[in-house]
Image (cartoon, rainbow, N blue to C red; front, side, top):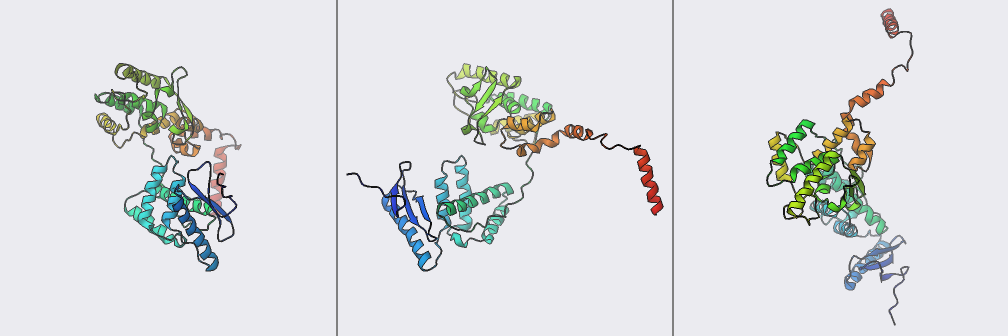
Length: 373
């Protein structure tokens, strides 16, 4: 006879069909039922964790002790639960920085001074506000997750400590500079794909990772589109990237290169043996040097595409869609590159105020001022 499984409204361990781990159900110190994963497939280890949690509940009820939850418990629970996130590897790096600052800390005793000391240390190491804010966000999310999962009430002293971030970098090229850069890239004998890659970036606004990971199966030549699925984009949403004539010409060059050297390769940007390329840092840096361009990164090609669109009068909402921004707020950093559009908008106000004569009104004001003095 098959063993009867523990009901989830009873205390103890149980299995779920959709999880390889042992799960546990118990009533916490506030009388709320908690059902959570032990994050282990080993029954003995799961029983040990269950016993510790039950002991914490007993101490909290009998001796009014708060459960002693460590930083390691909180951060590990969060990292394991969110292991499938696109940013999981980055989360681990941020967690490692927090471990340097608050390893072994009992989370019920975590205070604002601990957060301030972490921020101060990272600033002394030369880390910028944006990176520090991402670290704060990770710890805040981990604490909130623990409180929700275990019906706990851990303090979250990260609140209100977000640093002011400087306005995002906007470095872009003129069309003459861009032409010089493409020319400089064409001289890279070891990287014949670099010139077409730069042309694609300038004319699509695609991110470096999106371009280097682009497969021919997602290039729709008939409709002049590149199709990106959620897994390929930073925002995690599928989008279509339209191709203008220059982008199509760049793809044609790459298609001929593929036909000559590696006809079976699935990658748009690839080596002669058909293998995918993961970095173009050296070739791009050398191309910039040949073109006499300084302080310029590959990501700035995306800024250049946005700047050209805005300067051509394309509405910010359409620029947002081309770049794949999640909100138009991110696109607004380029608004200042189209002052003529703003000037046109203000000019529409002319004639709204009707007077006998601007000159007459000015003279009357001056006259009254003299009388008062």
